[in-house]
Image 1 (tube, rainbow, N blue to C red):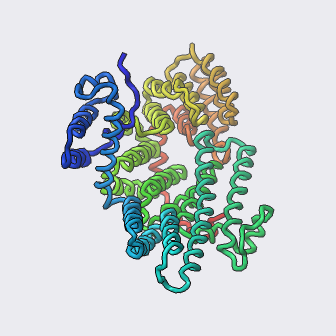
Image 2: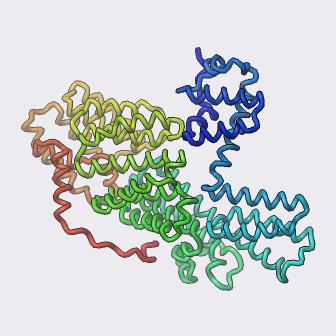
Image 3: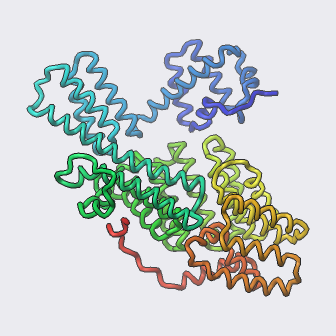
Length: 562
């Protein structure tokens, strides 16, 4: 049986663009040796393979024996990275800073420490302009080393200046670490659990959030309040901090990364609690931050892409059609830019988030059938990028595709995609797993598979109860499907009307909005009561929204920071 597996070298080669492959060939043939010619053959063979197959690879490159293959692959991997570094030097600020820092070290090791200091001084200004604090730590460390070991006749007060700079940057990194940890932990909580299900979930998230945000504020106090020399004690309350002038607003003014991770933390905190207006406010601040510091789009492109994605999501959750279209247009224009197109990672990320936004737009407009035109493209890209997209994203795509088919009336195809989720054993997004099963149940109901309904209702109910995922809406949906799937059309029609009135009572309930976010149950029930396609109901709602005046634009002030 062929030895087929994932392979780092194979994935690297298949992430290359044509220009990068051409550059590698030029790079490797400049000083070619027999060993280099072998790795060119190895490169060509791997480039032509659709899946990594070691046995086939050895047949394609007979000049490399099996025992030589690991070393040849390692050599090719290093040469590829070296050629990519040369090609990426002009467009990546990290690589430029690394290279200049290497030059400073080379000059120092040659005994030319004054030349080294001049490079470090210029490098320090560049690092500051791009908020690259980790490089500043290395630069200052080398400056201190030179000053300690050599007589440089530097300006008076040099020791005090470097000491102050080192302390400042270390404290700054400490604050950023607290905030970036909080943003990451909240995101991880959402990936694992989805939205808060009840008051206990919300209380747990609030306690988790407030403890960590207050810790970051206590660390920042010495930078924000005159006379404070050290981190404030743990017992310092939020109200005490506020009276001292230590606030989230003040923290956001400290620097780009402090603001970025602060806004991300508040955004995830709001999103988990399904406070969609606050979610919108903080993601807007996140995106605005890049407009205020446009040079950072080049440095933190991934964060900018993620910000546009979440801003689209916020308008989607608030059903702000105009705002959604404006951000989508902006996102599509950015997708066409060189900054995205010349980076494989950026292309993958924009595919994920831009395609998600385009599908969501079809959900908003009720154009489910038109949205199905995206499915072949999504399937093609999921295959092409299979080594670069995490399982969570794939699950979300399957659910959205299933929802498109369900909304267009093709319930059998919806079931096919829901099976991909239900039978994929992965400990991610328990909420998505639950709603896939509920939509699966509704699709079988639509197909009239009543012989399966009783078994499916019990099975899905047990699963969701075990996951502690049942809300009032799910309880009522299960009760309806269990009691009425075998009734006459007239009785079922009346039951639909009754259930619709009950569901409308929960539309404004924060803990119940989760169900409406995953399943447009109201529109589905309205389609049943009116006996028209679900797509028609959603489309009418969109047309009605266009006739309403645009909502007033809320001013975004520091008061938005809670």
